[in-house]
Length: 434
Ligand SMILES: NC(=O)c1ccc[n+]([C@@H]2O[C@H](COP(=O)([O-])OP(=O)(O)OC[C@H]3O[C@@H](n4cnc5c(N)ncnc54)[C@H](OP(=O)(O)O)[C@@H]3O)[C@@H](O)[C@H]2O)c1
Image (cartoon, rainbow, N blue to C red):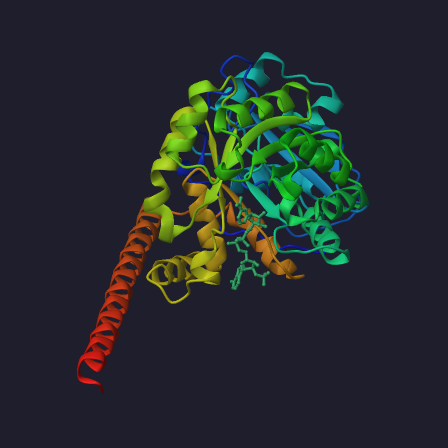
């Protein structure tokens, strides 16, 4: 299996490190960075896995640590962790050439960037054991891979197992599921079948209030279904599930984290008022808030994004591809298609790169066996959108939102007119008997 080389690899600065504050009364536990899509793929040149497990090297005054992991029998992943950065822009293209000497033995590899915080921590202890280095991204604090494969509409049975398995084999290391998706068991099975270590995959699941069960029982059931002893992120699926009230429900979530059943806890579909209500009594700040996020709702969701950034809450974006899947033909198509053709990319890649430029984690999926699409999603993180690109998509999204509002108002006016006309007709027929 081979992968096409990616388009220009320099990551856009806007998608980079964000500040984080972590748990209020606890050591920092969730690093929003690396907010970098985890992979840069190159074609296979050999399938012989003979490179050493770990290498260190200097390039452009940056020390890189290279971690190699067996993904499946013939697959390897190199994770390049930046230890010291003295230049603003990472020249990944040049780094690629520089590591050519080890590339010959790899089928593919990925390059991940880490935050400056992590850099500092790494430089304090830059000689981790092999086992530690394998989990380096997770070793310091707790980080979240910047793109997730979701299982929402995948159903039950063999299909979701195959699709999650495919996503893992392609390089996704973040699975997003939920109690209400009814396929946690399948996701867990795919993880075990993949041969990956538990620590190689970031698992998110959600309390959806299924079966009227409480949070404490639900997490236990989810862990059993997934076949794991902890999840990386446990979310309250919606504020309406935070019963009897947000502070009480959040206290239960905090207990779940303290008990080690979830490494981080968070929420989903929370607006600013609900986040405020939560923070008013929280001991642990939510690590993430997973929300509807695409160009047509960007302006509407911006306060939530800003609030999250201010409080160190990572925003996760679901249904980001709505302009393609549910609202094609809108104003966003034009800039997205133009950027896509300029960068030699696809429209879905451009939208995912836009999500990344906003500093959010993308949660996406394919409901079929469209492997090419998944590969495209992963390499989307390497697209270098300019500030103008991002601004053009923002503006088109806002225009589309205004058009939708205008259409809604017109529809409402038309309904009122029709109802009024019908009422007049009824009155007329009652009065004049026709
Ligand atoms: N927290 C929440 O309340 C919540 C709500 C919704 C979703 N989510 C999470 O987010 C995940 C993704 O949700 P989503 O499906 O709404 O995400 P999405 O990323 O907006 O859409 C994914 C869909 O886009 C389609 N697609 C991609 N590129 C396309 C193209 N070029 N042309 C046509 N179709 C294209 C794919 O179709 P194919 O399948 O045909 O490839 C896929 O089914 C879910 O699985 C779930 O984990 C969470």
